[in-house]
Image (cartoon, rainbow, N blue to C red; front, side, top):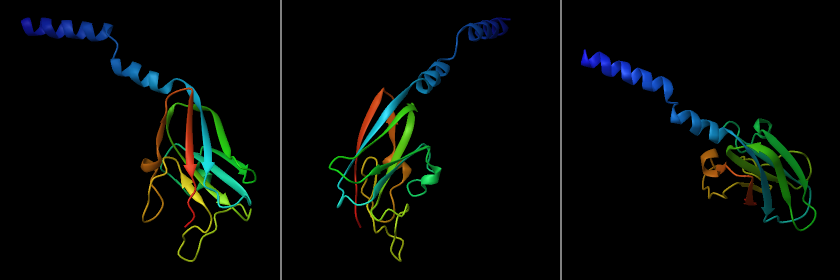
Length: 154
């Protein structure tokens, strides 16, 4: 009898007490912000800078068609920014490429290494191959987030 009484009390309490995890998930999902990317380290002002915002590993960093947002910024001038507004709070990574000859793609050598400038958020050091999504990932959890992406020419 005592055991069934306790089970009944626990059942009643669980009906009236909301799960804390529901509130954590709702708080994380609510809101959006602006991501501002400053691109630095250009070796010249030829062509354009292509900027891609990814929300998953798929295609990062080279397949810009998998990005959730994209921007093209002229390489001319002394300061280079891309701004993505109204981005839902979450985990993202940014990839940038300097399309120096303006052909709309990243030119590579016979080994597949970039002949033009590339960079990602967090500026991770990579020895073999491109950085992973996890190495470049950052959290957008406020009204604005500013990043600096330093281009590398291999």
